[in-house]
Length: 99
Ligand SMILES: [Zn+2]
Image 1 (cartoon, rainbow, N blue to C red):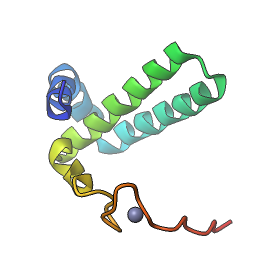
Image 2 (cartoon, rainbow, N blue to C red; image 1 turned 90 degrees about the vertical axis):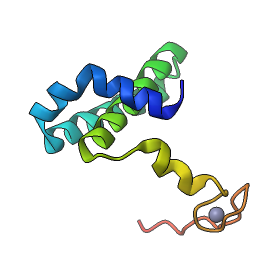
Image 3 (cartoon, protein in one colour; image 1 turned 180 degrees about the vertical axis):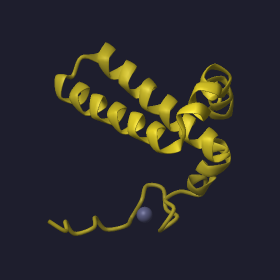
């Protein structure tokens, strides 16, 4: 399945509910899913990881749908390699930690 197909599928399944919930509350759901992914990364259970990666991508697609963003178009920024240095693999230096 292509990303555009996945995004269209998520739209078909959830767009009515997502539109009613609105952007701000949907973003909160997305962040909660990212938190669940964080917990799954620490547990290391493969089935949990697959579920949480799928959920995060689904909520990300939902946010893109609410904003009218075609994710397949958006990711073209990486088509020529790193979005900053344009190399593959990236040759940018690691940013210094700010904390
Ligand atoms: Zn780079």
